[in-house]
Image 1: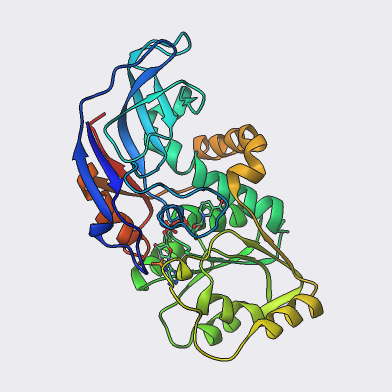
Image 2 (image 1 turned 45 degrees about the vertical axis):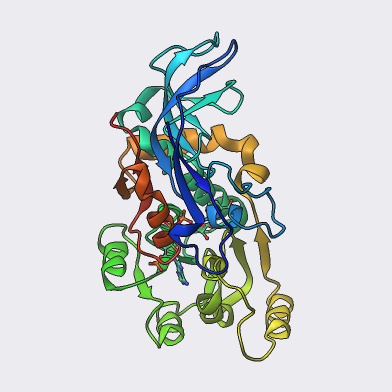
Length: 338
Ligand code: NDP
C-alpha cells in the first residue's frame, strides 16, 4: 500500500520535499468496515490550504498524515452489510492505494456515471456542484446578463460558463494563455475568453463587457479581480468561490491600500459579495444538483475536459502544477487501472 504523506508545511509554493512516499501492508477490514482500492484520485486547489496550518474552514492535514483527497474507489473486501465486493464508491481515501472505511463517508455510484467513474470527481462531483450552486444560487444569472468567469477552462469555471450560456447569458471567460482561450470560445461556446497574462486585460474586458458585468464568478483574486471590479453593474453579484492567485502568497501585495476602493464599490453599486464552501453550505442540495447535471450530461449539453495523470507518484508534481495553471481541465490521477 503506497501512501503519500505530508512531510512538511510549505512556505509559499509547495515543493516535492513537502511530500513523502511510503509503503505499508494493505490493512484488513474489521467488522463494519470495507477495504477500498483507489482507482481515481482528485487533485484540487483546496489541498494547498490543507497543507498549511493557518486558520481555515477545515482542519489541516497533520504532519506525517496521508494527504487528503476525494477518490473513486472499488470495494476490494467487505465486512459491511451495505457494500459488496466490486461496488464503486466516491470516498475520501486520500493519496494512497488502499484505505479502510466504515461506510459513513461513502457515496455509492450507480447508473450512467459508471460509464465514466472519474466524472464523479468532476462534472458530477464536487467541482460540478460548486459551479452549479455558486452560479445559480448566489450569482442568480438572468437571460441577457453578462457573466464573467475566472479560471475559465478549469473544472469549476468551464461549467460555470457553460451553465451561464444555458441560462441565456453573455459569457466572458478569463484564462491563462491563447490555447485555453481558444478552447473556451470554440469548444465551450463562451462568447469571449481573455488572457489574464495580457497587459491590457482591463481594456479588453471593458471592450467585451460593453454593458458592464452582472455576475463575476470569482476563483482567482489578484489582478483579475482588479480588472473586473470597476466594470461591475449596480446590483451585481460576486460568488466568491476561490482566490487561487493568493494561495501561495506569503505577503500582502505591495502598493497602496485598496480596501476603501473595494468597500466604496460595494456600497455605491450595492454589490452582493458572498463566499461559500460547497459541502458545508450546500451539502443538503446535492441530490438536486446531481439530478439536473446528470440530465444535462445525458442530453450532451455540456463539455467536460479531464487532465488525466497516470500514477500516484506523480500527484505531488501535479498539485504543484495545478496551482500554477499547468493543468488543462479537471485533474484526476489514475492510481490503478479500472
Ligand atoms: P482549475 O481546474 O480551475 O485549476 C486551477 C486554475 O486556476 C489553473 O488552471 C489556472 O488557470 C488558474 N490560476 C492559477 N493561478 C492563477 C493566477 N495567479 N491567476 C489567474 N488564474 C490562476 O481548478 P478548480 O476548477 O478545481 O478550482 C477553481 C477555483 O475554485 C479554485 O480557486 C478553488 O479553490 C475553488 N473551489 C472552491 C470551492 C468552494 O467550495 N468554495 C470548491 C471547489 C473549488 P489558468 O491557466 O487559466 O490561469
